Image (tube, rainbow, N blue to C red; front, side):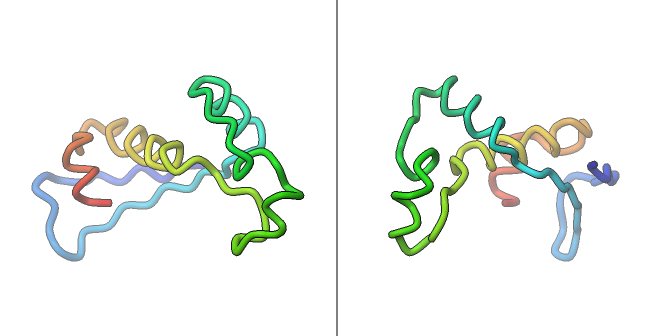
Length: 86
């Protein structure tokens, strides 16, 4: 569940916002299917156990997209500003 905070532009040092989303296996599979990114790092648990991560990892651009969506959903932060903010 997200907490939508009113964020004024321009952003200032100390401004905060919060968003929580559990990325599910379904999210990863659907995103991989849409982007055709079937890398072992996202889908092969056994392979990833042998890496420094120890488990599968979510597509980086998926986490970025979630952040942009949530911040632009308030109508207060543009994607360009969000990119600089992250």
